[in-house]
Image (cartoon, rainbow, N blue to C red; front, side, top):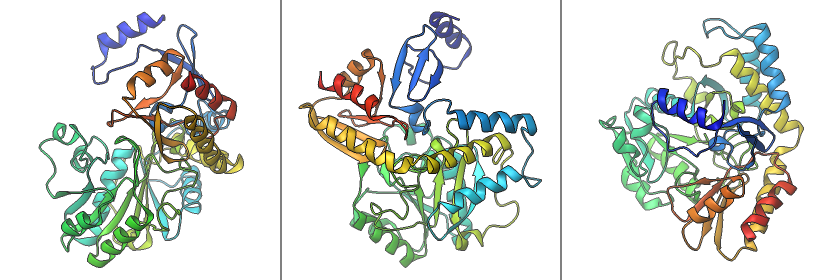
Length: 387
């Protein structure tokens, strides 16, 4: 099909829910994608932070193919070798005391289950989340999202959701109390423009949760699985060493295969009984094969260290561009803040066949490249940005 045929067919038969680029992507390899008209684009956005290993990584593709030929699916009513390995592998790279994994299908589902776990563990109902955080589009997750129009789109909202100001310790103290089941936070607020908080903030947040007996939940749907140069934001120097009671994951976890997860501490796990949580497709064999391959490649190829190198290359490139005011974020989750609006720069990069992303902050352009993007590929970005 030509691009025009693809555009027309999607418009005719798919519900229109996104404003799309006039691109029909049909193939990808590494940091590059090709359209149906065989135009080649450097992808520094990865389909919303999903493609941690770039596109169609051969190890992941092989793992999926081999598993598909052996067993594509059986539900959680039976045990599975590939699921067992994925759970053990994921927990092995998680900071102590995160010790158990629950697999699901997406980031919003992971957040829904995290909030349920917090409520079950505490016997309370209220959830505190933060202004400009984004947690998903399903009922509980969108009710925890205090960003632009999203929460309004989710009306009627799930009751018991309270808003605090990101990075503001006084704001936290005013809303967290003995009725709080959990505190849900994106440790780096990606869609809001890659907003960060200090390590001291996370230390005080942990202390406040401990004081009132509330569960602390890190939404690491975007920051997890090596994207910040660490396996998780949890436990990192940027987090002040703080480890939450629950971490949620998705995006990069399956390198493009839909999969989400909750990692929980022993204390949280002890409160969960049979049938408290459930999912038909969560933990399916194809997804688990993708998780195992993704984690193996990140470890084998030293991609945590490479993510930090990528950050340094991008920061250096931006330092030579007068239009850039600041660079925010860590590793391969970066926000380039311009002195003026970001969209003209986004458009010029797109015209030069480089894919990036916008944010809810009109001055911030987001870069979410693969963890294995090369220095030469970043130099191409730098050259266009400088021009």
